[in-house]
Length: 191
Image (cartoon, rainbow, N blue to C red; front, top):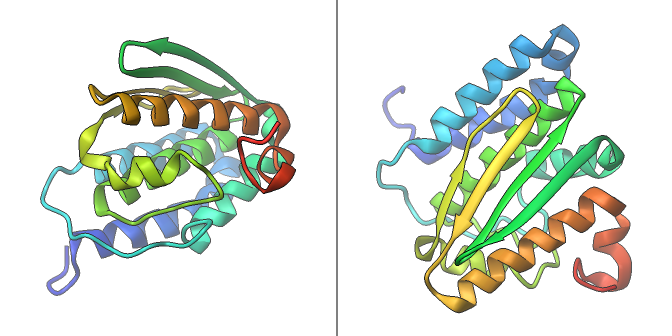
């Protein structure tokens, strides 16, 4: 890493470039898209101390917003299962479209990088503020597969565990309904 660039800045830049390049990677084939996913996962998994950053706003960074829009637009091409486990959930979100898998993987890596860096993303969600404020209070594990992203999130704290489960329900509604899940009544949780 060049001198004078923080790890957080480098990670944000990497994610922005990777998200912008995902369309081209998808067109070039799954192998290249998977390469981006591996690079993003490695960058997001780095455990060195990270600075606390500011609020990224309602939809996060411009790259985050672009990823949300693509995922919302193509929600019918996603599948999702959620299993409640002690203290949290185990989820699996998948697609048969390699470029959408790459987009999903980049999104998960970006959100977890925001959690690690203290960069809040609120997105009209009752669960995200709790999760971002208490990022150190729960465990997050994810891997990338050829078809998507299995995730496990758990906490021994009941309020955080409930926020984890609430967020899993919110994301499941996104997969089933797309943008209306967020826009319906101004909250991701409105029915």
